[in-house]
Image (cartoon, rainbow, N blue to C red; front, side, top):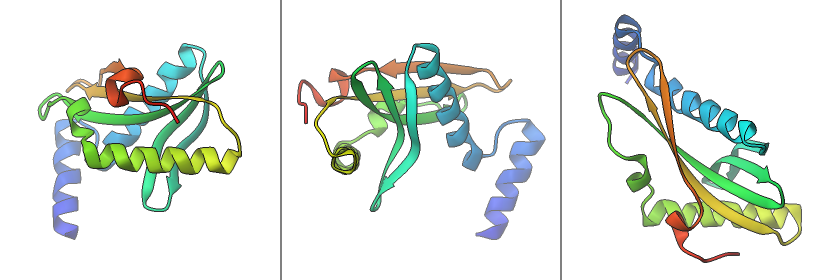
Amino acid sequence: MFFAELWCALRSWWQGRPVPADLGAVGERAAEAHYRRHGGRCLATNWRHGRDELDLVVLEGEVLVFVEVKTRTAEVGGEGYWAVNRRKKRALRRAAGGWIRQIGGKCHTRFDVVEVLVCKKGTVRLLQHRGEVLFGRRRF
């Protein structure tokens, strides 16, 4: 295990790309900056409820947005949206329910998936899937 991590870190350093462990953090920071540029206020990052996690919790006006960030490199590719399968959606609902119970109130909610593509030269592309794309019209 140690040697695999070391090899991965050395290879990433040699090729000038982020280490995969840091890749998710790069994507989450880019997504957070995106929401802030568009008037959102980040309330939490990597918030845990039991074994479930919310990557970002953002307040946009009066709407509470639960964000799942999927970061990919240009070599690996693949659409991050499709990585949010049925099991992950259930985990997002459980974690969002935990957040809402913690704040003790009802509010308008939305679930977003943000895909972040980190290119070889370090540039970042971001694609946001808003609301109904993930769960349909269902609300809490």
